[in-house]
Image (cartoon, rainbow, N blue to C red; front, top):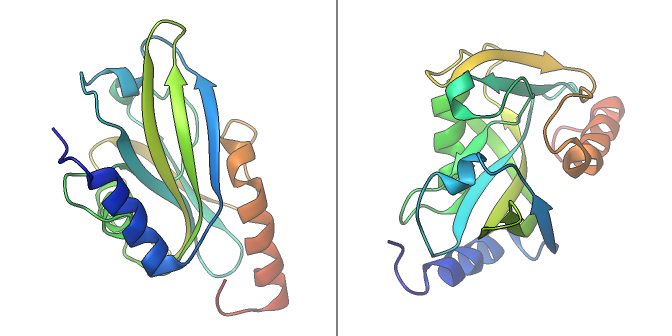
Length: 182
C-alpha cells in the first residue's frame, strides 16, 4: 500500500526536476480485463512512459507478450512505478526492462490525471509522459516484450497514438532542423 502523501510527493518532485508541465484530466473507458484492474488497490497508481527516439526522428515502440493484455497494439516503453520511485527513475527502469536501453535527455512533456473505468469500476492514476533519447540504436526485447521496432511515423495501431502526436511532431521538427536536444 502506498504511503499517505506519496502521490503529492511524486508530483512535486517531477515539477521541481522538470518545471511546470501541463496536467490534463480525463476519463478513459477500458475493457473489464484491462491490466489496471488486476491489482486490488485503492490508492492512485503512477506510471511513466514515452517516446524514446534515436536523435534522427525515429521512435522505438514495442509489442508485449499476450499475457500482458495489450493485444497487437504498439506501445511506448513504460509502465507502473514502484514504491518510492520517481517518475524519471521509473521511466529509466521500465526502458531498461522492456528494451534493454539507457536513456538520455529526458523531457517531461505532460502529466495525465486519469480515471480508468469499465463502467462498473474506476481506477484513478497518473501518467508521466516523456520524450527521451536512446543511448543506442540496438534495443533487445525484455521478457514481457515480443517485438521491438524503430518507426519513422506513428503506426495507426499504436495504443494512445493521439496522446503522442504532438510530441512526435515536435521530435520530427527538431530532427529535420538538426537540433541536438528537445
